[in-house]
Length: 210
Image (cartoon, rainbow, N blue to C red):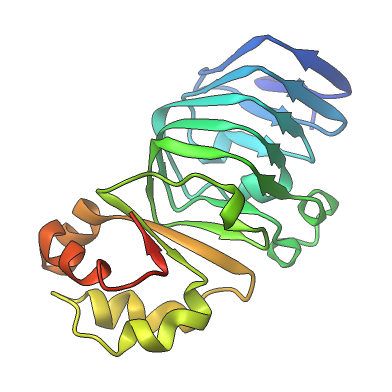
């Protein structure tokens, strides 16, 4: 999509460079046929201005300087050995071809990535093995295999509206959902409880990492 205000990075293999995607008047397009290795990618634009079309990121660091909200374009990217820093909410990563019929969404993947320096809220890992990933620690927590584990998670009493709003809805997640990461303080504020009360319950489950 060429045009004024569009910045397109495609048909290249780039190593050890720094990319600053910070111009809020621009639309950024990464891919197709783009490979970044050992690069630093600084993100300070809303999701509506960031587009992926099968880029391959290998051992890259993403520095999210402005909270990135509801960015499903990650499932059109392949991520291997990458590190994430900053705030991510409502973002999906991995393999989810059903999300869009566009060809780029058929090739998404994630493995060996590190989210320990990120704050994730309502983020999902789709169609990939979460065992290869490092998730953020408390006050974030990650439900592994949430659809299959939904019945046992619903059997206990959760504080506030956590059970009714979050746990009872797990079965309705897309079939490829392999992990769901939440931010306990944000969840507590929304659903009428405290992080401490949430933690007291999640400590009972080996399918929740925190």
